[in-house]
Length: 220
Image (tube, rainbow, N blue to C red; front, side, top):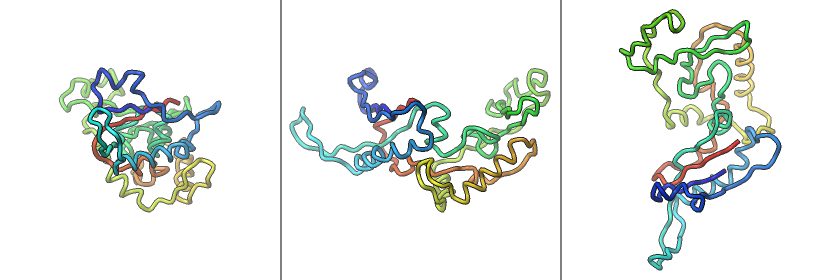
C-alpha cells in the first residue's frame, strides 16, 4: 500500500520521493477479507493524525500540530469489494446502482449480464431511444440515486461483524449468502433491502472525515 500526501504541489506529490510505502502484504494470493487486519494499524494512525500530532517544522524551526485525513483509495474492482463491504459479483455487483442494479441471468453462459447502462446518460441522449443497437427497448428510467456514506452507516449500525475472513460469519451474513446462492440462477425481479446486501462495515468507516490531505493506492 502506497500513501500519497496531497497537500504538496501537483508536480511534486507524485514524485517517488513523496510516496510513502505504508505496508507490503506478503503471500502468493491476495489477502481477501483479511486485508482489514493489515489495515487496522494504518487506520489507528490516521485517526491519530486527524486529532493532530505535534510535529517539528524545519523551515520555521517551531512545532505545530499536523493533521491529516484519508481522501480516497485507488484499487481494482475485487479489492473494492474487500474494502467497501459491497460484493462486486453476483446479481447486485455494481456499488453505484446497488439494490437498483439491472442484471439478467444468462442461462447458457451461466453468469450474469449487467444492463441498464443507458440510464446514466442525459434524458434526451439519442442512445436512450435506439432500440436496435441495444436490447430492443427504449431506456426511459432515470439513473439511480447513489447512497451516501451517512446512509450506509445508518444501515450498518447494528451489524455484528468480526474483521478477517477466518472468523465465522454472523447469522445475517449466512442469510444473505444463502439468498445470493438461490438467486444466482434466477431471473426473477425482486426489490431487495439494500442494508441486507452489505456483507460488512468497511474498516474505513472508522476514519473521521475532514480535511483532504492523503489518499491510498492499494495494489492487489
